Length: 338
Image (cartoon, rainbow, N blue to C red; front, side):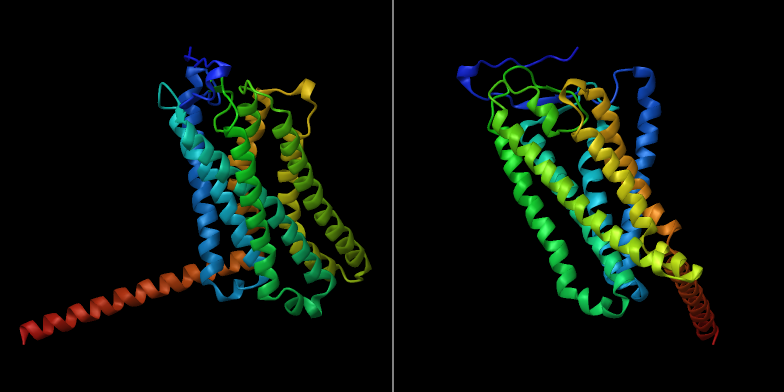
């Protein structure tokens, strides 16, 4: 059993490290879970990095849609990296501890990436609305300036609110325990071990979460209602299929992501369970970022075509390099013989 640090209220916050309980205490499951999550994180890193590189180097993917997709891949890679490696370490060490400062840093970056994702998904919904409902004005409306604003504002907002929440939490006193009932530093498990008054920070967190979820979901719902109105007016089957193909991948990601977040943060306090939170946390920190690149790749013909084209170009370039090297080798041999 892990040792818990006890601190008197009068002495203030004297906790120097926290102990992360991890996903499970069952030793028989440790090796299997380590292997599974190692493969999951590697798939997440390779998939999202591959998507970022592909959209960056392929000229056919230099459009607003793929601009937002690049940032979605970036934030997915970001919060899975903030959580994943530390979680993997928990399976191979006896005492899974994290320093006070590193716990605060982890909470800051996790909050930045997670909050950014909800608004980037909203921006992608708006992009789909413009592409389907106003196709002739698409490039004029979704200019580089507009796209940069739709990404910059969520990042600035996310940094601000994440720093606010983290500073508020870590200036409180942790005198009951230093054991966090999770595999990473999250706000709800941290507040459960605070011995000072948490009513203010709880109100702030609930207000921010409600605002983020309601505002972003409202933007997505309005965009898709307008999209559906336009789609139902299209007479041709081919036209409808093309319209659905534009927003199908994004809609799939939105449903899975928001369903998980709503389940975790809007459940009743009386039915709140940290074990349930762990399962939900694993899902949206490691599983969803792993599947997002697959969803966009398998459901998007442009991404598949770009990948095949780039692979073909790379193969041809490799063959040319090999042929040139072989020719140069023969030439050098002839010169030596001569």
